[in-house]
Image (cartoon, rainbow, N blue to C red; front, side, top):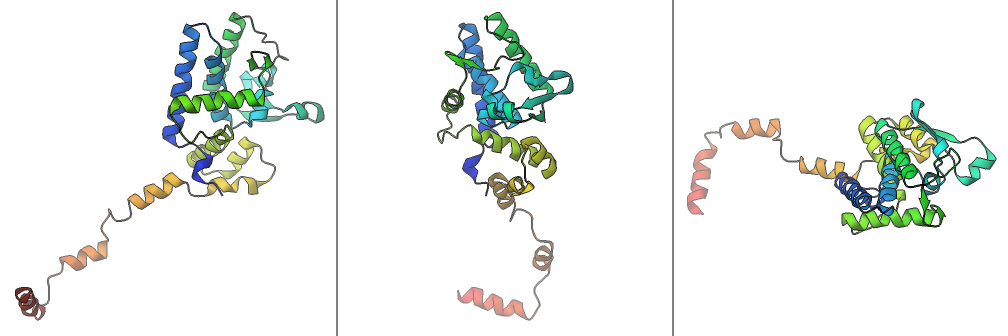
Length: 230
């Protein structure tokens, strides 16, 4: 079951992205790295729905920009089989290219085999990515501090809401079984609230006609007496 705490709503997504971008801009101005890396990580997680392990395993050579594809592989999949592929947006491609240019300008390696994300002591770890994500949640004032996996659920909720296409969501998340994807077809918390808010705003046509009908003459004196007696 997809409960409310498992994904970010529209306001939380907007806050998280805004704060991550602001952190990146501030760190760029002061020649620091952490905010720039955090914004790239947050953007990728929310747009792609990658698992954190897949995010940190991404290398520069995994992108096929001309095809708008990302080859997804964890460290285990690199040795045991071909990687999965997923579609990526033009906006994300632009961000990755800008991020790569920034890395080159600061002396970081950007060859095909080099990791996209690098921390202070080498390739970014799962724990390091979790720290960056939670730091953005703190900066955004999202008190419940959802974990990075919530970005995967958020991506799926938004994609299904936009398309109503479970096959597309399944393909994007790379689920082995459609049963894993059907949870996103459930009604979201926000949709329930929106429906409840509209319950009694539109008058029922039959009730309106009934109310507009004049009272029978035989009822008027009696009602008048009761009103006077009251």
